[in-house]
Image 1 (tube, helix red, strand yellow):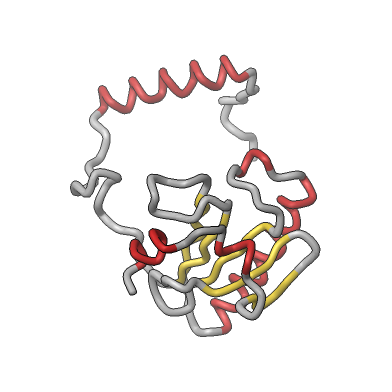
Image 2 (cartoon, one colour):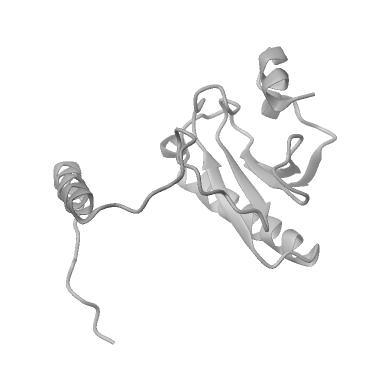
Length: 154
């Protein structure tokens, strides 16, 4: 079955109903395998609490998830993979994902050269880069974040 068909058939959150698919569990999250993997060895870390936003996690949940990510990476390395990507799925993502925050540990898989529209990725032009920097700095200021842009002393 194609993943998009699986998503169409789901009625409730599949991550809230997992039981025998859990590999490692902790107090606030669990590690499982992907039922629609990008590649062999593809694992998931999922908070037990149904939450769809990274920003909604408690500090304890962040720490718990980080510890399970480390265990998942150790498993991937033990399986013989030397490289991996960690991808966070936040929210519904245009029907491409389950609306329950989850982290992918994807071994030896090239994420790709295509952008979000399916076109080949391009490098920013200098003008685009300067405009992006200006926008990001304005957002940082508006959010009240403190930025120390001085070179570090080593």
